[in-house]
Length: 622
Image 1 (cartoon, rainbow, N blue to C red):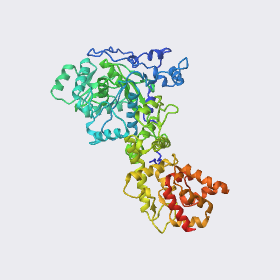
Image 2: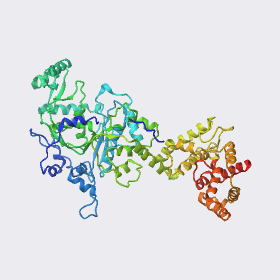
Image 3: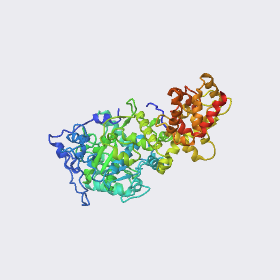
Image 4: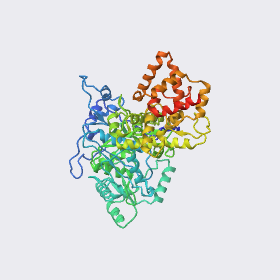
């Protein structure tokens, strides 16, 4: 069913104000697009070579010519034209800086400290469809980042997997299905992180810090009082290697910090936001906590490299942290992936979207019976768009094919009217096909999301002594049409499907159909017929013609055939078309001035036997 539309700066925007775009030389764009190996350049400080410590060959270079999606880039015009110079061939498709002809390995790495919400589902979707839209060999990886042990929610991981599956997102590698680069829970990868932390210590890019929380707080207070930034001042850099090893071996509590200025101020080219570099040096940030667990910044870099991730697609709030990650890649001598930071979702009025807002919770959309496919279509269009004339997507693969992969920056306003549009288009697409012909999962969705709720509304109204709003209180209870009576659930589903399909999308919710067209679900009460006949007596010629047509079984092939037979009888008598339809509306819907379907559709929906019953009821009242 459709949603009611409750109404609800971008969190990371202030971060961008603290940073400056990189001054690019006149011919820098061409050099920048050469290959991914150069799209994250170190600063003037020395940088290690691009050879991995183990001497392994680097992965294929990933071209960045697809960054035509960025405003102002020369590639954008060519991409928008979709034609080459000859005008008869489509421009090769690019996905966030890489040709679709090359495989994309993307990952979604949620933390099980809470449940899936709209923003995280949207991030998962863009990672998924980027992998699906690339050539064979692409993969979508699900990784659980559970290093923050103090904030874990006991059922969060199970709910994450359940919600992703409900939405229609599948993964090629993950904690439940394994894969060649597992384990896929960070808590199960601690030996890997310790090994890589030691590598950085041995290289001189990291050091152990033995400062206690009290010492750190005193240092921060002193810096604050002196009017200086409260960054960690690097106190334990002065501890020599031998002493550090001895104190660690003795079990003294410590963390491991990365030397924030080891590579100056790293810069990167983001596939959505373009060139990015911070104005200030990084502080010596923690990469391994005192409990032996890595921090997010360290673990994600190690995992992305070892899992051969080609694209890191995540929210804009992580853009400010990207230079840290580039510095870690440089320290290891690894090639960074392509980064793409998505604009954050905001309320319709542009204000910050809170996780406490009900509109953010995925459970709301499940409870409101929004179909998963249109929900994903809506999310895909929050910050990007479909190609012109794209058909309503029915699967993640359809969304991957329809998406332009051109992204907007900054706050993306939630547009609930657009969600209603996508949900309605998908619903009408399913209703346009016979129920039995739908794929099993769509057949089940139509039943649970639309047909069963409609039947529930009908049952509730039948039991309500006040009846339905369209009819006055009747002295007798509402009588269901025969198609809705009995134990045959399939018959009831088929009838409701036929009724809703006959609307051709002309309804907002199923409850609207029930309330506006009650004659399709119940026989009009005699009180209703009596009042209508008394107000405007029906033309006897039309009633007689209808009786003749009801006697001819061959005329009831479909609704239009019934109407044609009626015209053959009534036109020679000079009966006006408006009069015909008014009388048919009275018999079929209970009144000449009520809202109803066309006469032909009422014939087709209600059927011959039901029309026979209603005509007899009217004739008895005359």
